[in-house]
Length: 53
Image (tube, rainbow, N blue to C red; front, side, top):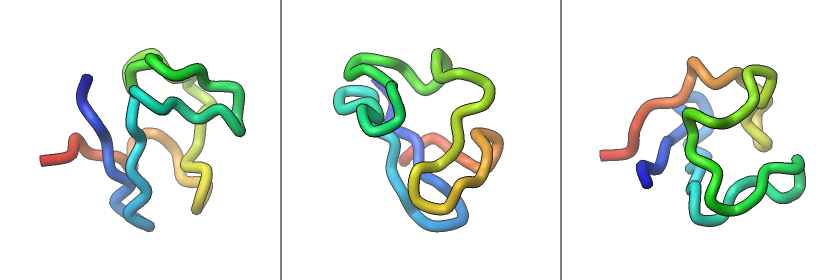
């Protein structure tokens, strides 16, 4: 699955790890994250993430 990077702080969302501190189970793709999910480091919205190259 594709990893995504926050363009503001550099946090990488890795679907294999999810975001368990915020209720996102491992195996959850970026596209399947809730619309109200925000970066756990800097709190920007999903539209500030880009696919990792």
